[in-house]
Length: 222
Image (cartoon, rainbow, N blue to C red; front, side):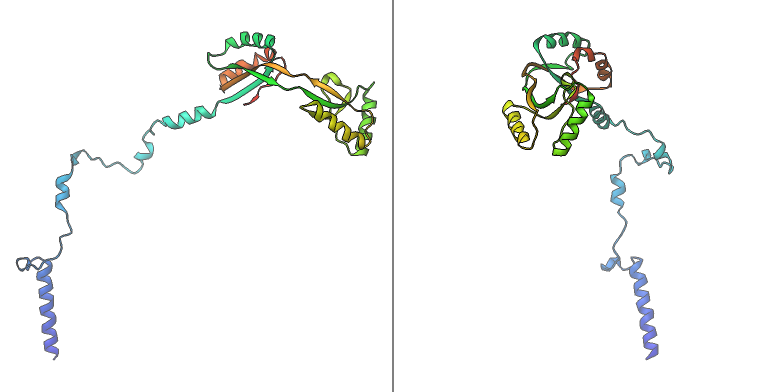
């Protein structure tokens, strides 16, 4: 029995060797060929392939980031606006803006509604203002500094319509405020609005010299 097993194993090993070496290919018995010589025939100029050392890729110059540069340029500009200005001030402002690059600014028609405040004052001095502040704190009424032209005094709120200001005054009177009144802070202004859609560092530097032409109107984000 043992002899038969040994003979079987020897025969099996011999057959495996013949199969693995392709000796039985004529009988349709051969292992699958793993190499693909046809791919070598498909290579185009393999002699031009160059193997670079490991650190050469890091040392190679990076491609010019055109898109990134465009995005960065866009991020360095901002849109600013100021106004409105009346017709006379707008005409003077247009002359001053002529020093800026063409197309960098526009003056568009605009309307700023009138504004009213509930006002207390004008008082003789700062001591009177402090006394009124103490009274308002006792009544739990909020207050703030009024426009410069109405100092010394106190503002109890600003409104876009005279009706809204009068309603607030009525509410404050019921809470114990006795000497407040409605005052027109500024009338409706019809004129032009300055708009600078893409202000970069160079234009911003030039704008510093144009502050007198803005007549105290601040530049703010669009």
